[in-house]
Image 1 (tube, rainbow, N blue to C red):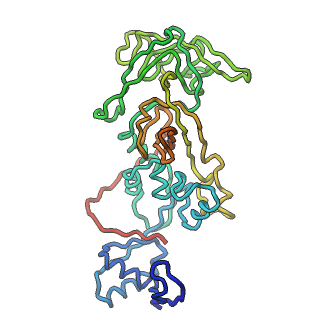
Image 2: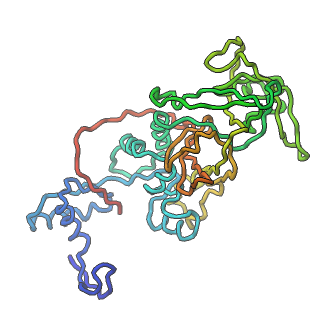
Image 3: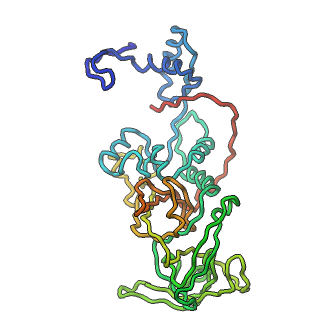
Amino acid sequence: MIYRIKHAHHHRTGNDWCIYPMYDFAHGQSDSIEEITHSICTLEFVPHRELYDWFIEKLNIFPSHQYEFARGNVNYMVTSKRKLLQLVKDGFVSGWDDPRMPTISGHRRRGYTPSSIRTFWEKVGVAKRDNLIEVNLLEFCLREDLNKTALRRMAVIDPVKLIINNMPEGHTEHLEAENNPEDLEAGSRPLTFSRELWIEREDFMEEPPAKFFRLGSGLKVRLKHAFIIECTGFEKDESGEVSCIYANYFPESKSGNDQSGIKVKGTMHWVNAADAATAEVRLYDRLFKVEDPASEEGEIKDYINPDNLKIVSKAYIERALLDAKPEERFQFLRLGYFCLDKDSNANHLVFNRTVGLKDSWAKSRKIKDSSDFLKVRILLG
């Protein structure tokens, strides 16, 4: 059977036709019309190949050829259109371009680069048996690409105030910071440093253990692009939470011209409170809490990771980020890679976390390059 008859209104042709070609008849012809050399399909299309070839031969049309390969299943993801549609309809994600979705639009909005996705699939290669690919490899490829291209910026997402005791009120130091140490042509940007700063709460401990190379009473640390400081004390609020940290800075320890002779093992990022901007930061994590959600029993919604998204409504960012463009990618120092989301406007910036800085994929694999260009259509069943 090569046609089916269906008396129904068609969304494009109306009621002009009631017969429609079956997949096996249309597949080879549409490939031939477009002169597809390699029609790449998943393994369930193997039984269809004989009929695919027969129609092409009998119609004497361009000799497209069908090749089959195993699905590229990535752990902690689902790629079934039916299950993805369920996630959208049931409101577990905001739409097909939600940054948690494994769609091209979702990956683009999250900050993935085209080259990182191509490199990932080059590393994985083509297989004839089903496998489950580590998502860590995809993240590894992404970090490798973003490390070369993403501009460096500073942001504080869980802020606590740091006051520099020995800096006069109203005094400002002007600093220079490189945009990307991996790309000398990326240039630099100006920073300001004054008496009050924002730092990450986790960078301070009241009673720091040995080998804690951040800030604590009596400890010294370098502020990135700025000065070495030494913690002198802190205050707590009524709930017992640290509300303010005090430190002295060493004026002769300025980055790029350090004449202090002081050696420190830690470096912290910061944002100048006097001219800091604010932004919403969306911290995305894996959508599912099990490695292979498609193979689990029950509903797909039962395996949703409850911590797949954390929203920081007010993070402090350096002013250079006010010039960010939609989908532009940045490395927030010590926090990860982020990109500007389409929900942003002039009065409210929104940044999506693309991936963290930690590389948890420890294996190394060789990539086999191919210079042959083939016109390819990929059909996923």
